Structure formats: structure tokens, C-alpha cells
Image 1 (cartoon, rainbow over the protein chains, first blue to last red):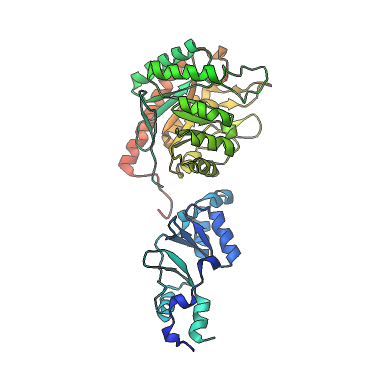
Image 2 (tube, rainbow over the protein chains, first blue to last red):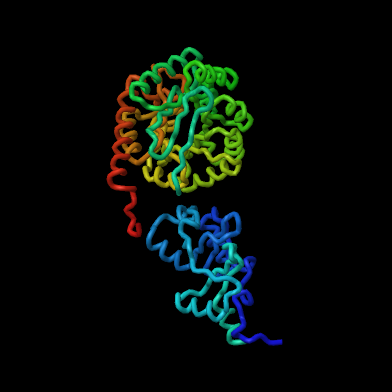
Length: 138
Length: 293
């Protein structure tokens, strides 16, 4: 049975937490960079002790941080990643229609959307490539 | 990070708050416990000065000096006698006391007596020492090693926090500048403040010239007033200085301890600089001048 692309939800294509860079809120910046490198994604989701999304840290944040802070690298690596994270990022729920979520990403000019449930718990990441592939049916 | 305030002192001794907008706290005494009578005499004389200045303070002295340069240097009165003397100071003078320890096995008995337990700078990244200090449940005076960057002290703090102890006071005692020489990097204070814990300046060890005299350390006491004023202006919450009534004959750190005859003067300067900083913050707001702030 095929599913109409208009019926697709974010939950159908989200990348689960195990497949995306995730770090705890006390993680050092260095740990976030390692997670982003290992999982080959330019965004790390920072979770609190209850698994709720505390912030996101992206490649763009790294660029801005390097130009702004000009700290020596050992000092930057030792910073808490949360100090450089976006604390209240745009999010979607798993039930949200995929097409609407992609429109939101286009509107904001972003490649990734953190997915959280009604309690703010992290459910995964909506990445633009698999989302487009699903919408195109390829 | 919201600044934390720690409280030193339990039971019948004075309770001293360190952090935030609390008054500057003095931590001081002879480097080593030399005798019961000398310790009590120093507690009384320092107390008179601090009372006159209305300055909260904590008595400091150590029972075992494990990092002396020479095997023939005075090593200390030992843990049993030392802790008994510190206990007497608590009881007789009503003062909170601090002492360090350099063996994890000494942490529990030391923590049973002192109000603030000190981790020596050379041992500031030793997990067994930090864990033992944290497990005493007493606030921990954690000195930044002369070889450590201020941002890496967070790792040591987290080793203490892992024991459930979230009462830490971070101290700067100088940073190695080549061999036998220390300098103070005053950026260390705002950087260590980022942990949220209060910070302390150890003035008498900062002017130390480590093992510069062959088998003992030298020092340049003449710089103490300058460094103290600078540190107070940077926003320290506590000032640490070793004090002696006869520095030339002190049994430990004779080249760095402050002569007690100058204590009134140095503390007065420190208190005034600390108060002025708080007044400036009140008038102008926090020290934030970053482009994005």
C-alpha cells in the first residue's frame, strides 16, 4: 500500500536520536564537535537530564563563535556547549504534516528541525534531504 | 551561570558566606601549624584585626606540608596533633578553619574537623583527592595548579560535583612563567567565575618564586599590595594570605608569608577595592562589554 505524500508526517521520516548528534547539557563544546563529526551532521541537539531539548548547536553557530570569541582553541573546547547553543530553537512534533514542516524549513532557511513531543522530549531530527526524498516519492 | 554563594562554618563557629555581593572574606594564618600556643596566638591577633575591619574570616593552617622542596624542611606537626589544634581554635575562638590534605585517606578525618577543606594546587587534578574532598561534604577550597589553565579547572570542579558536593571556592595562586617564576593572569578570575562558583586570590603564594633558593622557595613580598588591589578590583570573593608574626623564622614559606604588622593595611586596601567594585557594578551594571552583549 502506498502512502500519499500529502499524508506524510514528520514522524514518518525523522532521524531517530541514535542516528543524530546528541549531547547532554553539561557536555563540553569539544564533545559536541565530536558527535557532529561522527554522525556527519552539522547540528547537535543538547538534552537536559529529562531528555528534553535544551538547545541546538550548529555549524553556523561555530562560524559565528569563532569570529566573535577569538578564544584560544583549548579554552573554546572546554566551554559548555550550551553556552554557545540556541536555547529556544524552532521545533516540530512528530504528528506535524511533513509538507508543512518542509515549508517551515524553507521559510527559515534551515536544513534541520528538532522534533519534540508535547512535553518537549527529544524525538529525533527532521533533516531536509530525507524529507524532500519522501515528498518526491524517491 | 547564576553566581553561587557558599557557606563555611557549622555549629557554634561563625558562619561565613562567600560569593555574590557578600563582603570580601579573608582566609589566613600561618602556613604550617607550628604549635598550639602559636596557632591560638595567631588566631587571636588576626581576629583582632579582622574584627576592627569588620571583615569575615577563616583561620588557615596546615598540619602536613607534603610539597616542601627539601627533605630536611619542616614537614608539619602531623595529622593527629594538627587536627586537635584546629579543633581547639574552632572551640576557643569560634572561628571556622581550613586546612589541606595530600593523601585521600586523610580527607575524612580532616573533614570531620575543618569547615573548609583545601585541595593543594599541585594535586588539583588528582581524581582520588578531588573525590575524597567532595565526599567530606564540606565546602572545598580548590586551588588552580600553577600549570593549569583556568578553563580546565572546570574538569576538577566536575569531579567534586560528581560526589554531590556543590560547594566549591576556586583560588588562583599564580601560573608558572618558565622555571622558578610565577605570574598572575587576572583573566583567570572571570574565566573561573564562569563555573558559577566564587573565586579567591591567594596573594602570598602568587609572589612565590618556586624553589628559587636551591632547596627552598623564595618570594617577592613587595608585590603583595599591588596584586591584592588588582585581584579585589577583578571581583574576587575571598582573599587568601599566609600571615606570620615572625616571618624570618616561620617554619614554612618564610620567604612569602606576610608579616602580621602589615595585615591591617593590606586588608584595608583589599576591602576598599572590593567595595568600590561592587559600587561600580551597582551604578554601571555588569562587566559585559563584548560586541554581542
